[in-house]
Every structure is written in structure tokens, then in C-alpha cells.
Picture 1: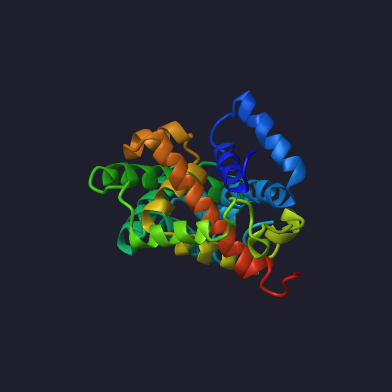
Picture 2 (picture 1 turned 90 degrees about the horizontal axis):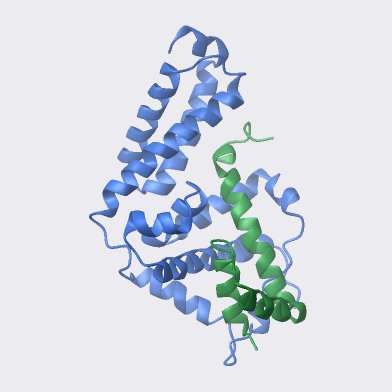
Length: 65
Length: 199
């Protein structure tokens, strides 16, 4: 079975390339059983979104929304 | 500033945008003088071509797009003289901190298990969050940050990042994983569980 450490590597790479089917399957099985790695997956998506918005939010209060 | 641009954006707005741009460029170039030069050039180019922006927001988007191009050029030039793959002490210590989150069987140690960060939109609406995020980004080792920024801010595809910086794909993956873990841990400690930690 996939370890959490390996799962974090796949979850990071999933941000950069399409995982192949066997990788996806092993990952999904792991995630079904592991809340820590499910949170990790959401956190990866959060980081991406925060980076995308960084330019608008740099610095002071008047920018953004 | 030309007539069209000055009718849309006043000096105070421009000052604000310029400050934001410098912070953004500084974060990526890690060099104040270079960041200021890049911003100056981008602003001049944008004001030169300012035609019918629907106000401040459109102008800001446009000028940031120009700035990103300038930053990419600078990074490209620099990447010929720096060795991205060389592991600094800071990077080694990030890797050790990462390893320390796991038990011997490579599963999360209970105290290090990633927590639920709740509603992302609610977090990103808070101005203080952006100060913490900024600090966490600055905290990343220089080369790690450079690869991460190219991928996430300048929005290069990973193969392009590898090519531009002359590193292998697997090395690129290792560096991006290191950066994401460093940021994740920093945000978890400095923002998401700064108040209380359920255990």
C-alpha cells in the first residue's frame, strides 16, 4: 500500500502532470482511508489558488475584491 | 503618463499599484534593485500603451502581465549562471523537517497530520492572511522559491520550467514538492493552527 509520504509526492505531481491510471488508483485507495492526505490534497489546491491571486492581494487593503 | 492613462488612474492609485508590483517582483527576483528596475520598465511600457482601460482593475491586470514577462526574462538570463540543483543548507533543513512529519512506516505522525483548512474563500478574504502567505513565501530557500514561482506565479508548465532552468523533470518534481511542503507547513503553523490546536 501507498504510504502517506509517497501519497504527498503523487499529490504534488498531480499539480504538474496527469497521473497515470495505476498511480491514480493507488492514490484514491489511499485517500479513501486517510484523512490527513485528503486534507493535504485540498491544501495543494489551496496553494495554487492563493498563488494565482497573489498579484491582486499584494500589500495593502484597498486592492482585491 | 499619457492623457488617457492619467484620466483613468490617479497618482495615488498608481503609487499603490507600483508598491504591489515591487513586492511581487522582489518576491521572485530576491533582489531589490532588479525588482525596481523591472517594475519601472513594466509601468513605462504599460502607460505607453494605455488605451481605454476600464479603470484601475484592468490597468493593474495589464501591467502585471507585462511585469511577469520582464521577470521571466530576468530569470532566464540568471538561470545560466546559477546552479538550481545544488542543495543549500536551508533546503536540507526543509527536507529534514518534511521527513520528521512521518513515523517509521512513512505514515503521518499524529501531531503532523495535515488539518482541515476550512473554506478557502473565507481565508482568502482576510487581509492578514496575505501578509502571512507573503512571509511564508519569503521564507522559502531561494532556488526552491524560484522554481515554485515560475510554476505557480508565472504559470509555466512544468516541462518548460525544467527546460528554462536546465534541470531534470525528476529534480523539478522534488523541488516543487519541497516548496509546497514548506509552504504548507508554514501556513499550517503560522495561520491555520496559530490560535488553537486540537489534539
